[in-house]
Length: 388
Image 1 (cartoon, rainbow, N blue to C red):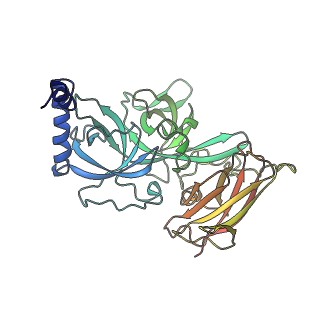
Image 2: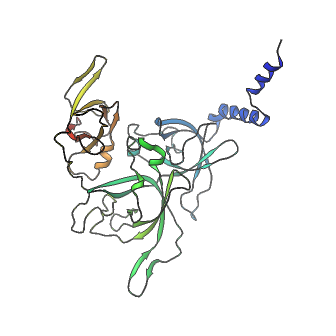
Image 3: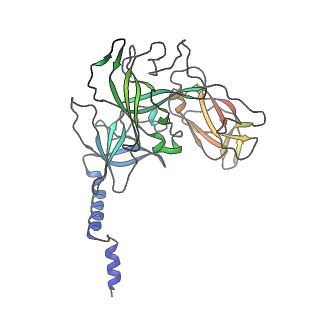
């Protein structure tokens, strides 16, 4: 005999009220028919917890592009109850293929023609959709930390901004450029947290008012801009910049790599990384090792493209938080991109793995692998080479 309480419990499993029942049933129908939609795509999204992963999505039009506006956003809808934060990178296949042709070891360093950015969330009653913009520029800027200066970069969206002037401002004594544009970048620290560096992303919080950025396809007389406004709360996860046009400085700016303030007024390169000061009582030793089921043993061999090598460090003191870094030896304008191909994964407190990406850019290259604590003490380094 079926008791009333048993029958009631059975009904409650489908929802506590009619609204929940209809929602759950709609979710079941959506899941069952998801791959049958003409807009269905298998997309590749960067998540904080799991890194790059494939997920099911529906791609649809939000607004029709026209010559009266810049790039418009599109909708991306995931399966019911599957959500990702605004500011996430996502690869979406175009109409030429159902599959993505990307370098899985370092997708952001390869072809980004199919890379998009989640810039908004449409909280509809049931099926949430995200607004996405296509990535169209690699923003680069110079950042100073103490006496260290380095070039940082972030893939984002160059946007148009309303400017109701002629583009030139005059007064009695001077003439200056008076035009603005805009840029939308992912707030990498907010979206990816402490996994930001592991994924090869730069901290966009280093962009400040008066940071100069080059946005142009003209490598002879490029357009340079200075950051005049920074908005990071609408929505959270996306950094919106207002950029005021600035004069191109032929002495200080480098159009070959699209970086402003790359040189000093004397023509010297400003991007420097001074040698660390090594304390004699705070030391470390790096050893290349082989990791097998039999244990860990020292080895000495070159790195191989696409294969994993292991390194461990021994500090003179216990409880040290190891900070690893790899840098390309020699001068190369694409050093930052090449370094990102050397994927480092920290396996425990003292052991890391290095996997050179499947690219000819790293073959035959020499790198400096270094380690220290977060303050720069206990520093040591070794030279590693990638077999040609």
